[in-house]
Length: 438
Image (cartoon, rainbow, N blue to C red; front, side, top):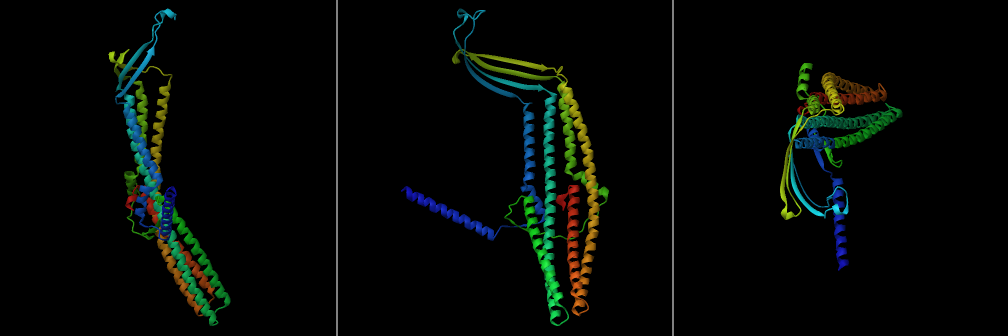
């Protein structure tokens, strides 16, 4: 019977393993495809990127710290039950005749402690609530940074994808030039050197195509890593590198948008507020605090004969001297307040620098796109003239090869210009805190 059961388990396990292997093989042959626009990629990164999740968890930590601070202001209720066996000395000296017999004691009590008045604890609680806001703004800042990085990774993937298409076009063009050289050689209007030169150029372009395809695969892996997706998912990018209309902005207009939307500015202002509240909580330790304590319980030598006792007291605590520790902490907190104020000014200047730099870069890249388009048009014009000269025997294919090289360079210039233009759009949107508006 045991043998039959074991054989059944083995058969079931084997069947399961075989099915799993078949599923994996099918997935490798037909991987999951995911179509993504740049906005989709940025939003997916907010939901899946591990770094963003870490910062969200810090918000939860700050919330729990605030709960802890608030707990110090709420009633503290505790209960205890004890049983003891005690022996008492009845005389002045520990002599045998002066020692009582052991007595059992049973006690159960409920104690309540309540801070009635403590400005220091109140300020600490307010600081903890402000720290929640700081953590939330830090999380939003990280989301913005991640969205910007993913957007740039998306654009980089588009750039390499366009490079692959450009290299394929170069290979196709070199095949045409090779056929032209072979045709001219067959009628005696070209030499073997012309054909060999065309073959060498074709092989060079094939090498560049292989490199471009490898770069494209690496770029997609980096994009998947930034989004937080599985590397087995096949990404299909739905956007394209192109020149899009951009609403002109003056420096003052762009800076005003940044002041309204940059999360870093709001976070730093909250940090300054947090430092001020922390300073206030330490200063308020100079103020007397009032605490109420009370307990009620049963005590007796037998549980059934216990008597009720209670104790209620109000404690006024007046700080007098602690060796200068409090004053040292106050001076330290004042320094932190000044430090946060300096950081606020530094963040404001950094935002201004980023906005101005992004505006300049966008203006420059727009002009570079126009120049690159004109350069590509002229390169194709040169290539056409060189091909006609070679076809009628007025030149060798060196001119054709040189013209084709300049066409490839012009293609790369246009791709690079379009990438830099769209990257500058991302940089400006990040500098203004408006990535969702892309």
